[in-house]
Length: 322
Ligand code: NAD
Ligand code: UDP
Image (cartoon, rainbow, N blue to C red; front, side, top):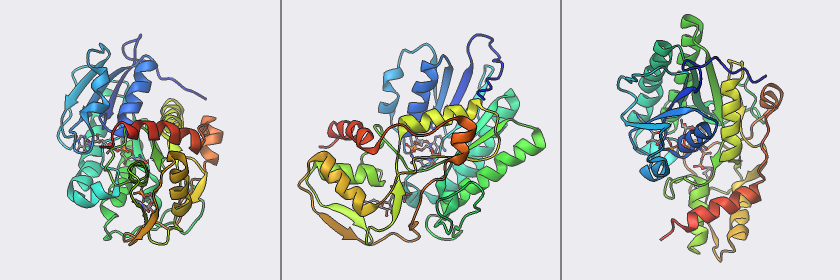
């Protein structure tokens, strides 16, 4: 199943990772380096952090370019793989910068695809479960077309990713580019920004400070959380495989946000109490990936149980809370 393409350099494949200073991009970079790739990371730090890649300083196989990927991307060496992860990913980020979010999903994906086409490289786009919107089909299969409000506050993110998927398929069909689309479901772990507003950093930092845990709405909305190491392995397998339609990667272990808050209180041994805050507009009521395709095509399924992933994540956030 794992179809590796012949590498241009013969010995060592070269990967370009956009969004390399982000949570997932930096972990992907580490995995690629550990598997013998040369990595050229690109990021403009809009939601990423230099700390996420600081440990790579001096690594001969890693090069970093600070730039906005909505501008022309110039790389002066052959490239085998382009991994396009650049995009704000947290609701509070993309609510604050909707235009930049739309631009990176459209213009940024166009530039990254142009780079892959120019280099004859294989291309992977980081899509999202948000393409399913507030889903009317549960769990979500790749065949479901979604239920998204174009004009709601999340539209800037959801529609930019839906446009990006369409653009990827355009390059695949018209230019015969080798392409992959990964639909990532909620993923967590070390290197998430503590104040990025996503539920894992929010609940863990509140619990570590014994502050109230802010459950939005009645807390009956569901999500399913995947540990980053599982996700990145799935992403790698998808790129190296030969399937060119979207594949869901996530952990199907679904729970309500109230259950999740209790889980975090227990895992941190916190004295925090739960408080309710208004539910953000268009917050999806339920989400769980159907991962039948990933299991069959990639021989992939998540291995890290929530309790184990949370231990690592909580350790990381302990070093970050003031
Ligand atoms: P992140 O915010 O930590 O990382 C995104 C990175 O992209 C940041 O380092 C940011 O500075 C960079 N970036 C944004 N716009 C850019 C631009 N115009 N030019 C250059 N760099 C730019 O988020 P993440 O959680 O690591 O998400 C990575 C990718 O995975 C995103 O495409 C996101 O949509 C997707 N995704 C993540 C999740 C998740 O649960 N973490 C879920 C679904 C999809
Ligand atoms: N959420 C919450 N309290 C918070 C942050 C988020 O109850 O402090 C909820 C949010 O309303 C959503 C779920 O947790 O139902 C996951 O939110 P997140 O922002 O992590 O990502 P989403 O899956 O909505 O993109």
